Image (cartoon, rainbow, N blue to C red; front, side, top):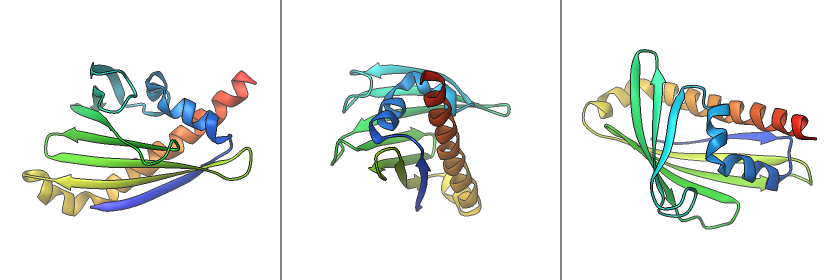
Length: 149
């Protein structure tokens, strides 16, 4: 399942990239994230792997993140894997003038096992979740810039 989501952020591209690439900021815009730790390589560098733990209702989900090579310094490519699901997320950041940035999140989900059946019924849930994360990041980034000015 492939889909794209996008949002415009009222910050210069360099500020957006700095906030986005700092794993300590994840907790500010992913409220269900409970822990994040690098398990291989240097955090944020190509080839680095991290474990993420989410608490969603009474379910705990463990996910592995791998940093993939990017085609541009303004792109961030990651592969997320959990039981039955993988998602290659290509985040493209583009300046819109001097103080505004567009984030385009290209998602390429693959499902196996029981998740391949469930995915037929949950497509809109995945889209809603991704859009919610984009919106939360925008809110965090814009609020963070107001605090640090």
